[in-house]
Length: 130
Image 1 (cartoon, rainbow, N blue to C red):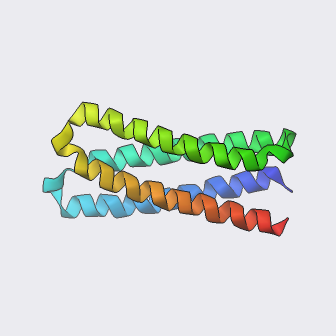
Image 2 (image 1 turned 180 degrees about the vertical axis):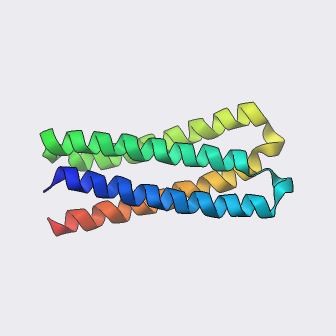
């Protein structure tokens, strides 16, 4: 198991996917300027990048030192990702108010589910190779 290459590949593919989502969201925001979609796009992009890099660093540390704990890490990080996502949306709610939350929730959930899918597929393929 080459931990360093796995982390590089995970971060590289994840960042490319986030950039693609950001580009699609930005084009959509430019096509519908009355919806004010740029702030939700940046919040979703920031959350995705933060979580991607944070998980990669934590995975590298666990895979290098406590390999038998990787399955526990996957479970714990799924719950942590959800709690962090809810907290992020709650802060958005406090900042923008109830009436402006729909774009935040929609764009955030698209980013969230795409990244959960990427994470699941990436590590399922990696686990099956071993």
